[in-house]
Image 1: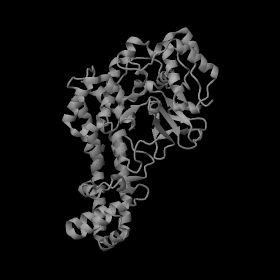
Image 2: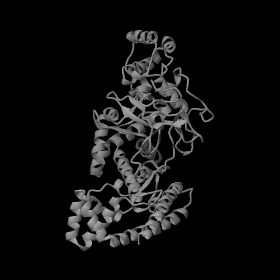
Image 3: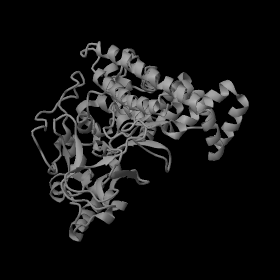
Length: 495
C-alpha cells in the first residue's frame, strides 16, 4: 500500500519491551489516517492477537519512561529511510556549548519510526550542508494524500505538559501573569518550554532525547538578539524582535521562582534554547481546546509563501501532514510559517527572511494610533518588494493623518468613508489632497532610506564573534532599502 507497516512482530516475540510499538501501530490503525494505508489482514490479526494478551498505553513523560520503559536506543530499530554522511556516529549528552554541534536527525527518525511514524513512499530527510534539514519527496504525491503521520504518543502537547506538572506549573503561571498580563495568551508556549526543559534535564534518560538531539543549537530570531541588534533594525522589526525577547525574559523570571523543579533553569543558554525550540517548532490547534503541539519529524517542514502541505491534528492528538495539491518528485514539502504578505513577524519569530516574500510592511509605526483608529491590519499596509508599489490602505492612512491634523471635519468624513468602503467619497478626498499625501509619503520613504543606511552601517561595525546575528539583520535592512528605493522612484514619477 501507500504506507509500510513497521517490522514489529519478531520484536514482540523476542522482547516484550517492544510492546509500545504495537500500541502506537494500533493507535494508528484506529485513526483517520488508515484510509490512506493498506495493511495485510494477516499481519493486523497477528498484532491484535498479541496485543490481546498484554499491552498498555505508552506516553513518554517526565521520569516515567526512565523508570518503567527500556531506553529507546536499546530497542530493535526499524530501518531508516536513508542514512548519509551527515548521520552522527556517536551518542552523548545534548551539547549546547557548541552552537554548531552535529544534529543527529537520523536517530530522531529511528525513534519516531519505532513509535509509529509513517511516511509516504519517497518522503525523506534532506540536507545540502549537514546543518539545515528539510523533508522532500522523491516520488509523486497526489493531492489529498497523507505525506506523514505522527502518533500522539510522541507529540509534545502544552495540555499534556499542564497535566503532567500540575500544581507546580499552575503556580509558575500565576507568577507569569502577574509579571505581564499580556503573557496570559502565551501560556501554551510557556508549558511547551517547561516540558522541553524537563526532558533536557533527563539527558539520555529522556524518551525524547533523540528528538532533542536532532534540533538546531543556534537561532537568529528576536530572542537570540541583543539590545545592540535591536538598535540596528527599523522600528517595526525592532519592536517585534525586542517584544519576543521581553516575553522570554518574563518566562524565565517566572520559572526561576522555583515552583517547577528544573535543574537547568538558571542556565541562560539552556533556557533560551528551550524557548526557541518551543517558539519555532509548534503548531497551534483550537479544538477541543486551544493548545500548542510539536510533532517530531513534522517539525522538519520548511516554510513557503505557497506551501504544498498542511498540518492537522485529530481529537486524539495524532498529527497528519497532507498534500494540498499534486507534488512532483524532488520537491521539498513545505507549510506556511505565517502571513506571506508581511515577512517581518516571521523574521522576528524564526530568524530568517523568506526568499519568496512579495511584500513588506510600510514601516509607518509613527502612525500606529491612526492605524488602530481606522481598524487597518498591518498586513494591509504593504509595499511590493518587486516593484515598490504602495497598497491602497497606505494611502488611506497617510491622508487620514493629514486630515486629522489640518481639517477635523474632513477627517471625520474620510474616516466614515474608509470604514464603510465608500470608494467614491474616498476618491474625492484623495484627489483634493493628493499633493499633500504625496509629499508626506515621500518624506516617510526618504526618512526610512536614511535610517536604514545608518542602521546597516552601525550593524556592520559590530564584531561577528560577539554579534553573529548581524548578517541576518543586514539582509533584512537591505531588503527594506531595495524596496523603498523603488518606491521613492515611483513617487518621484507622480510629481
